[in-house]
Length: 314
Image (cartoon, rainbow, N blue to C red; front, side):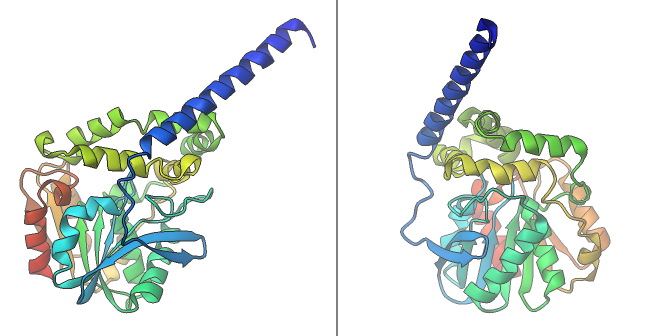
């Protein structure tokens, strides 16, 4: 081996080691506040890993399922859980690959989550359940209700997933992207670039909230922590999400389910009216309401108004 080859190998080793150390430091920094740890956490031993959930209140059960975007967890329902628990037995869940649940190295799909929610309702809740979803998890609830009509009673979708996006499947390009993110060290470094505090701040200000003055520092740090809670394994669900592995066509199921469905939409969220109209086109029994001056997360920005609508529907 000549000197040039030795130099290249040495530089590559130094670069890899440096990036690895940067990754470790970032994970340690982002998870140090421990915003997601609660004394009331329970764990469901599912076949693919431990599922973190909370349970509070008494009455007809309500299951809260968070969005599938990076950093999401049961935290996003924090401002409505206590009020809901006054009249309902309320469960919040961190889906596999999210929050404080296990995050195995695997491909995460819609069908995987349909199995998880079905098993969770049957084995943990134990009876027919009202389900409230946020964002992309609406497709999971639709498929659960379609596959097993005895599992879910009423459905509430907060800014449900665009039906056009549901139809997008993994392509050659997205498969390559998934592969790159899942590569040790360098893939983790790429993931960390997309999950910095600055990125989450920008997302909250431009996508999640209409009025940035309502954003709390804890909101940002909780999403930051949720995306780095389990170290390097946090990236696997993200890789599947952005590569369209979590998508599935729900049009047929949406047409056939007989559940009462209520959509709560952010009035200032881009294309919200078009998205809602598409859902109603395939199921004209759907009821809807728009929360003024909100975007993607009205239950964090204006929780009282969201609670009022949920209470009326349930």
